[in-house]
Length: 260
Image (cartoon, rainbow, N blue to C red; front, side, top):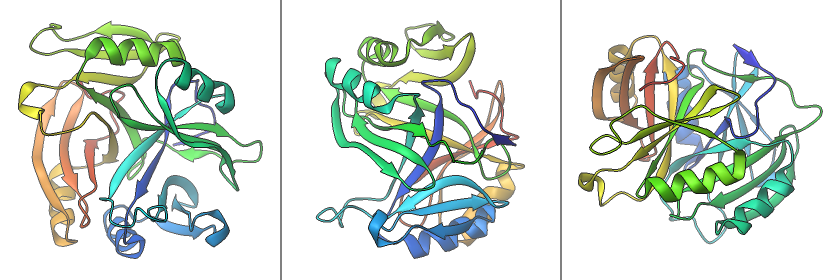
């Protein structure tokens, strides 16, 4: 569906940074049928990915000097005032990586890292920006932060966006909190297990598919990898996959509201 409004703090824009945008574009076209609209060299060679003619994600090469950085997916969190949100990031011991900047056809964006080093963006939609694809096949449907310290993450993001936290695990062996805005869940926070010690804290993007098994087969044929095969969760069937450059993302059948 097309979505025109996101409350402050809701994940709204997935973005892929990859050293080979052309190969990535072919891969995601084969998987999701995306098409592309390039904004040109004056806007960092940024490409808007389209689904049925509407924006669905961003695609860009690494910044100058970071050409060897690994490919990765990121997510932007909606804000009605990106400059004010950027100030709150710094006031709560986060760090700004990219200062608020205007991006034609999108709006005003900034890039930050939280207190544990997880990267995320801030997105203030432009006045003339059209609706964004959401939950349809190939579109974003859910996001979650994988954090080392549950307390640090909850305090930081609640200070930014006033999230209403709800623990739906046991808080010990399985510490998963739903972050809500106006009583509507917008994202999840998972405390990482000791088995995940080699992974840094990070945000995960879930993209909608009709059938995880069929999507996994298509991903393999297109040169991607299945890292964790499809498994059932209370609100949907999910899988963890990677594109040919190694950028990790998740699949979720039927765009379930939240996957835990």
